[in-house]
Image 1: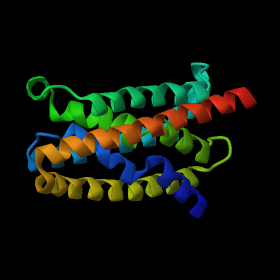
Image 2: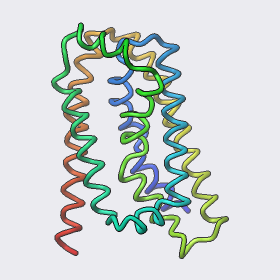
Image 3: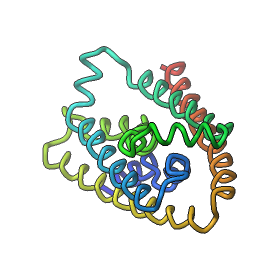
Length: 200
């Protein structure tokens, strides 16, 4: 059980979610940022539970390799990281914020692919292999996921206070630095997946 919890913690990466959360909630009120955090967590929970129950069946039915799925997801994460690094003018940002609902921001890129990352989806499928684990064991994994997502939510709710303390200029600097880190994580994920393909 402990090994599974560690695996899930690493791939969901509650702390690593904060840069994305800060980026997607920049310019929002504290209440709106809280709403994005809660909705993003709930959407991520739904996605991960879906992959616990049917992810392996779905990918097998579509004849998609797990490594292909992981590479594609990390490419999406890398592209989002680039938008964090280079950014846009404040006017363009404000115009987009007016056209984008809190729910859309909560779904992409916060819930997917940040919280429910390709690695997280892949891991929940492997630790709940339908052919090897009982329904009770899969339910236990869902409880573990719930606990880690609860920690993720608490960290994001605290992050809204950080935004209030550092201001827009500070948030902009942090967003760009964290974007660089996020891009590195995505590239690392792609490299690891490619190594798996080459070794196989």
